[in-house]
Image (cartoon, rainbow, N blue to C red):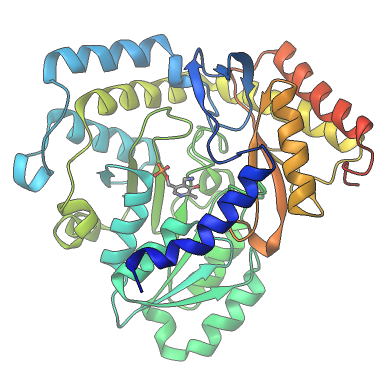
Length: 399
Ligand code: PMP
């Protein structure tokens, strides 16, 4: 027996995948050229799955802000905020996030993963219940595990099922945190947040929303699904990430509850890790300013998303959700999805291959995500690649 024995099943799957000559988990990006272009194995590729929704990774203002902060404040913070202090940038970004959502309180974390880990482990302890949407992200499950709360699942996007399960908890419903996402990352479908808020609050539970894939995408000012559904003042906690529409790395939570500040003293993933580095904070602040002042980016993202969705849907692909920045195509088997994914790469389009057990309901998905930075020509190229492949391999095109 060895601690390494547990890797045997993984190694087995890895070698089976390697034998196909396709390795979707280890694509080497030789060179990254822009928000939408890269060189992969010496060939130009359109990036169409990188969650770079507003295309801000190469934005001039964001780069300038990051470079300036590197020069002025150095490469790292070399410790946590408790040990090494809060830099002016950390505090400014927290104030800007709170103002953006119209609430009083905000905390910044070093990654989006840590935002969920840090928030959920601090909010929900062994006496509490967390009622999770069945399709929630791994970071949400891990956060609940770290805090030791009882985790219960309700059916994905189903307020009636949530109602039934909260009802069964009786008095304990009042010690319950309901956790959902705004837009779900795999299929790109959207939570019925107004109804979920009604149900949660009717039972005295609090509601927590992860807007990782909806910040910069939904709502009049781009703050997410809570804004789009008119429930910004009713959700209790909103969590998000800097790694998608803001083009950097880091995470946050905003809340109208003053208790959010206590999380700083109760959250191991906040206390025991280095705080975000100054250049990342600076580029994130510049990206948030761009998000707020350039609604045209959001409009362009939606135009691109609608074009791809419409073309694929007309071509008979089975798509996971109504039009939105995530366009997921469903296949009947992992082999079909893998072949299609490789075919797209051969035609110069890089998307995500999502297979069970990482997907809900055992779905085999080829997942594209659109960017405001995709040009019309790039969208045409992506559409041609999908349709060309489906026509060539009729049996592969689902529909
Ligand atoms: N929440 C959701 C819903 C996500 O999809 C992700 C990342 N895919 C995260 C949190 C983690 O964010 P990050 O990559 O910034 O750590």
